[in-house]
Length: 268
Image 1: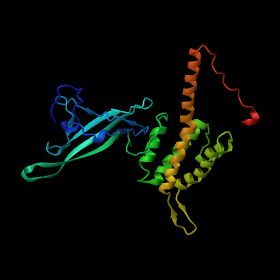
Image 2: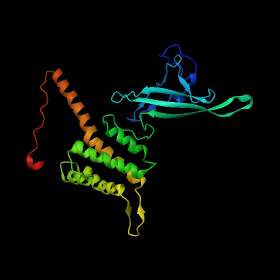
Image 3: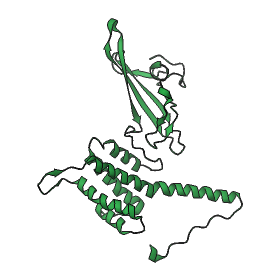
Image 4: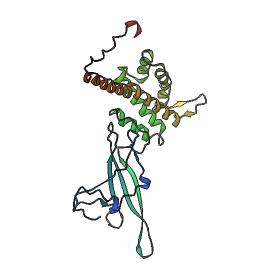
């Protein structure tokens, strides 16, 4: 932990050593899933001069902890990514020379190691709830499905205007509205049973408790992915493209494109 002369130092990485980037591997953003150049920067504290790492315990020989950060290069995302490196002594060799080990993990975004990206167009709290449901998928598929169930209820309320008291009634109301695509309604028809199944203890005809499996919990997240695209992502991308086209027409001295007239009542 050597003192720094300034806080803009990026030439050296973790633990005062040149950054090790095997093969220059790009970094996959935990949020949007796109890849960025590995532009990691050491995060330096101002304790006793600028330092890039701190001792992990009372004894300075126990090891160091350091942070690095970068931003996703995707202009629609630009997520702040922070990773932690912890250096610890595995054993001491002849003469007391320490054999060190470095463990690395993602500290931000939270649950950033879940390996299930989400489009940056999806806002909070839907982004955070999705990340939490993904993070516990392998630990507790049933609780992941329960969290997804709550997320689904909020989606139907916010983006489909379904404000019924419970999820089953919201799904029923959504399915009955035939202006929505058949594949979306069919998925929710099946998901309704999984939602009820995951929220309560179920038994078969021999009174054996049936647990929600990982496949069912993961498919619930797959359906939510498609709902994100249907409710949020595709409409926003279309809106941006239409706006871009309108601006180009304006620059060319052309009249803007008129919106389509409302559909007749019998087609609703």
